[in-house]
Image (tube, rainbow, N blue to C red; front, top):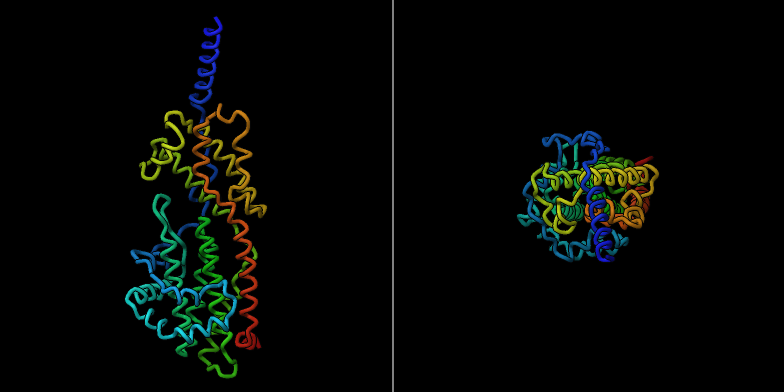
Length: 359
């Protein structure tokens, strides 16, 4: 008798569970669409497309990579290494790989936009661009060492403009993080070079180029990073993943997610979209309030795993957790980069070679 009662209760629980999770709930309207993000520039005007298309990864010798390490913060020691390693530096820049990267960068510098343009289901070559950026900074150092100060200053001016645009228009957290690092490196490299200059020895062409460099540095606004675009783009990415699992798109990058989250037929897409919307409404509100950790997903475990979480759409909850990259740990790093940028800009503009230009 007890066994029949227990079996009946178990069957009832299973039927209720299936009823809750298999019911055809109405799917909510999306919070945002691609139209809520700034329009991508035309490819013919976007320097990112020009430089990154089929560009090979540039390998930097270890000794040269330390010349653009913004963590050094010792410009005199860096310039002493430039003097020591000058032959190696010029030899590296004369390799076919370095010439190819710098030729492409020169073409990209002539275009008005520099916006990272990557498809959601394809790898984004941010690391390839990072190496090309390193090569350009080494080129700026080599130009300055060779006495081509005007050309070096204009190259740094353009890199700072491109880096700033990469941060301002970044739609992914990694794009913003890479952009901030590149901007800090460019300011440090400019500071190393400008610190060596004696204002009274500069010719008119160099002074004009330094004036443009200083103007570009003053446009750097490291007070804050607006994460609203990052939140919206992350939301659109996760919606696309859910569409793929629901058979509304080509399944190109989700088999591992399906295996990890659970059987696809147990996934209630409408409930999952509801929970996704609730999560991103909280993240967007945090981005508006300037709470970077919460905007990047911090604190979600307390929200998404209340008691009895498994009873209502457990596969959907598990899937959303798998989709969530633990990116809130980058919040402190962003603040540290912003503080370093503010200090780096002020230090560079205070150098005699630039300070005297104001007069």
